[in-house]
Length: 531
Ligand code: ATP
Image (cartoon, rainbow, N blue to C red):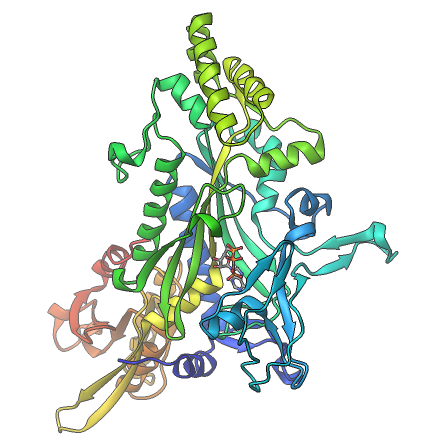
């Protein structure tokens, strides 16, 4: 079925998933709140991502850093100088646009002229059609604030525009305390803030949002070569579904993480045909990036980015090394031992090769030599692969994917439409609804309460005793509850002792109902959870 953002946002409002922030005061553009169901959904996404990325692996640890950090971090990262979007104003209707998006909407491309941006011929305001637009100017997206009682230049700080930088800034604390050696990763999820010029598409582009980011540190290819004698590339057809291998170069690691992240989205319930990969072209890449791929999802408003996975070389740690004056090098024992076993000739030959390679890429020969000398002692600044995802974007994608209106015909031939959110059970806000068939029979109600109390220790459960059972099922369908459990007279076993302690288990998607013993319920529910 065709789904529109209006249908989805209307259900989200009605069923307590998403509300405009500060709604009683007219809201605030670019800010959204998650209601009772949305809060559960987002928490499930965050927790499942953590399990998949950190808990189920041996080589990733976590971090929970502050939102406001020393502003020098953002100087080192390049955000103070360069985290800006080009902005244009319509001089007639006063509407403000992000220049690249304005061009894109009209099938045009914004032009970079040295440091300045230029609008291409024919670009118009999409709100009023006027061609009377200002020249594009850069607008820094970071929210500024002041730390402490004095508001002056020395107290300026920023709300983080990404969670990733804290991982680099804490690298030197994490390495010795985690007892991990490269290759290993650090994951963090949390709030980020960007003063977007034009928030839009519901929660897709917000000014306050959450990210789930991983910095996965790897050896520079030169270190891999010294240890393994060669560097595996994609041309070697490495097996990306098995365990990572020591001879993998950055290219293989990058592709491995693309595959891992696709696996995550599949487990989260997004169908293969709605997931797309967009490989950034050479001229679109940041100067330090070797490759970047966006995982995109077919939203009702177009195919748009869910996550970016970048191979960022040693750019970030090197920047922090320069700006903080602290060495970001790690000591790699495998490398040190491999080099100790090499002859001086072998090392000289290796060095000559690296110098030739670096200078061919426009880099400094002296830097290449110093880098090799470090490697021979087992030292280097790690490179990094960065899968960076948006929690709110995934929540929106899951809502769009789950939304369904199903036409039904009842036994009397009457047509009806069932609205249902087909979430994967692991991410559904409520896993099980416990429904006593009637509420005026105390033994039956107590039996149902007892079951509810035991299930809710493990899963978020709902209790609903009001209205006809069919209506109650429909209410659960609308919030995506995968299982409904009805406790009825047979559960008490008064008339049919053989049915004592059995319940009706009703499945959301098929609406099938089966009779199961209470003792088998938990295992059945558990078996449906993939994340
Ligand atoms: P864009 O080009 O769309 O502004 P970006 O490519 O700069 O975004 P990244 O900096 O790569 O985005 O951020 C990583 C992830 O964080 C994105 O893939 C997205 O899921 C999420 N994200 C970024 N900006 C926003 C936002 N304004 N609202 C919601 N999620 C966001």
